[in-house]
Amino acid sequence: MNNLQPKKEHKFTFGLWTVGNPGRDPFGEPTRQPISPVTIVKRLSELGAYGVNFHDNDLVPIDASAAERDKIVGEFKKALGDYGMTVPMATTNLFSDPVFKDGAFTSNDPRVRLYAVQKTMRAMDLGAEVGAKIYVFWGGREGAEADASKDACEAIKWFREAMNFLCEYSISQGYDYKFALEAKPNEPRGDIYFPSTGAYLGFINTLDHPEMVGVNPEVGHEQMAGLNFYHVVAQALEAGKLFHIDLNDQKGPRFDQDLRFGSEGIKNLFFLVKMLEEKSYEGPRHFDAHAYRSEDEEGVWDFAAGCMRNYLIFKEKARRFNEDKEIQSLLAEIRSTDPAFEPVPLKFTKVRAEQVKSMRFNRAELATKRLPYEKLDQLVIDLLLGVR
Ligand code: GLT
Ligand code: MN
Ligand code: MN
Image (cartoon, protein in one colour):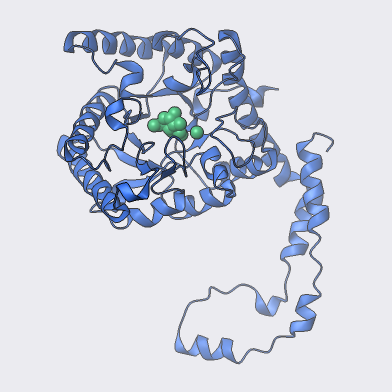
């Protein structure tokens, strides 16, 4: 079906670290050879992706000389041009090197905090050089195992200081970045500060430039905390703060699995895609996932194709949901009300308050209204399982 063919206009992106994941896990060595950034750009483009994103050190090794850096970046830029690929988002690796073992922006050691800021400024330079407009912050090491070790209020202040400084840096350089903060409740730290997207949404308004900063929710990270991802993203979107999104999948609350998008949580992700498509989310559809450790390189491309395909299947199902007469008439029935009470915005005036106060409601009758959600939900299941 043509609708299931990924195209540039769908804005599908992958991280170099996602398809480039060699299958290492905490218990085992890599099972695949690394794939070069240039090959990744080529293969993803052939599959219909729009762009690639990276951490500074996914592209340039942490100890590369200036000449090595320029050579790598030059080859990478050429590949982007050759294969018509973009880099919408860039980020910093503030978690792999041992220097960040007790945090980056929230390390107890001011030298480590400053090094993290320096590393981020340099990575922002690199991202800007390839045209990135979104800058992601995932604070994987910003947390603690032993709360005795660190004042959690101080840690939040240090994090704010860093964000304010880096916003000013972006402005002063004319980079025009939008910052997207990515939450995760735990792993690799025992506990990570700002454990959910909601926590970041609260924090953003305490910054000097809240308009520059939004969120980058990840499916699996919110599910690790037992949350409904569709609801999490709804809040971010409604607040105008969905600057980026990390699509993947997860088998419930446990370690971060980064599974192929749409391979597990079908119903929740269907409503997610429907919302992204219908509420005019304009940003990239980024897959932050990786192939099963049991795969070889061919399997990696099967994985990448699968992520995009599942997104497009959900998009197609959303179209059918909207065109389905039975579903739509059930929804109309569910939403029907007494025309005298057609929703009027609940806007406060003294008169309106008095009016609402004196309204007469038949509570018992209201409670008897039929809500055929079993039938509605089953129609969704029929639709998603392809018997409708
Ligand atoms: C890392 C993490 C992801 C983040 C990436 C951005 S790196 O792979 O697991 O969730 O989005 O720093
Ligand atoms: Mn992520
Ligand atoms: Mn993850």
